[in-house]
Length: 181
Image (cartoon, rainbow, N blue to C red):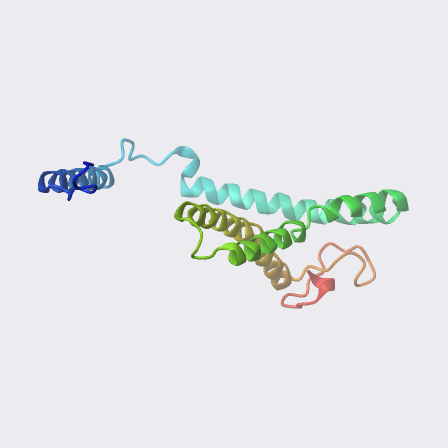
């Protein structure tokens, strides 16, 4: 800056230097994408057969635990003291997504009301960054809950004592019923 001219026009040399720097950065980024991996061998834990065997073993363990442990656990829970059940229901309430989703929606609505063109550029940038983070939290909390709720309804495993007993293998797929989710 000078007294005579507060803003000097950008020189051609400065523009050329910026363009050269941009080209160098792009060339470096594309070179990173194009280079081959140092280790082309698949790690042992990622071998497809090993993953398939691990998945089959996991499914077998889950099915066996459902058949062996579910009925006794449900029967034991039915005979638990009422005070213990109330404590666990109270603690479980804090894990529900409503505790997080509602304040996030309120904060997003408040930001939408506050974001006006009269704010400075920095303030609008801060509000935009906060909105992005809150939006991420909203989807990171809400979307898995929605997906798992739909999956549970598709599978349709009965809740305990819906059909008279604590049978762990009672299903009604696509039931879309609270008793079968």
